[in-house]
Amino acid sequence: MSHVVPFPTTSNSSPQEASQVAFDRQELSAILNVYGQMVSKGDWKDYAMDFLRDKAVFSVYRKASEHPLYRIEKVPALRNKQGQFAVIAPGGLVLKRGRDLNAVLKVFDKARFRSV
Image (cartoon, rainbow, N blue to C red; front, side, top):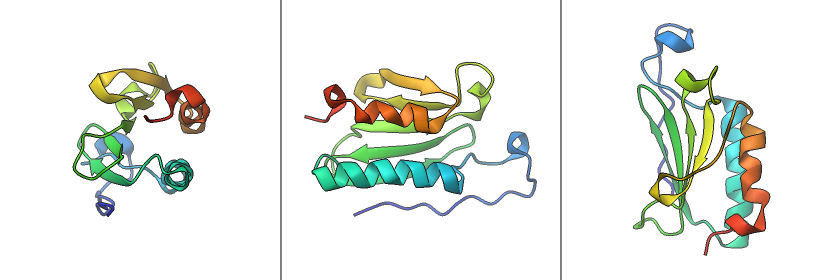
């Protein structure tokens, strides 16, 4: 069962003035593409999306009742520093961070990061 939160609405189009951070269509499409591949392998079973004031988070689960296996985060405040996208493992270990979401998501192409 997937948990879907509707996209937040804002009165201004400027990302700095948005009341919540969200993934745009292209970003969400890239994330769901990886999610679909991992579901077809049987590694992932569920997901949740959270849209907060300072970041958007896509969490993936093996089972709905567990802690997330990975979190894919978008933090616009880090756009000009380390990069606004990150893949985070349980315990807070940052596996990959960068400005390009597709490059960051390639961390899941590596066999050593397959869920156990």
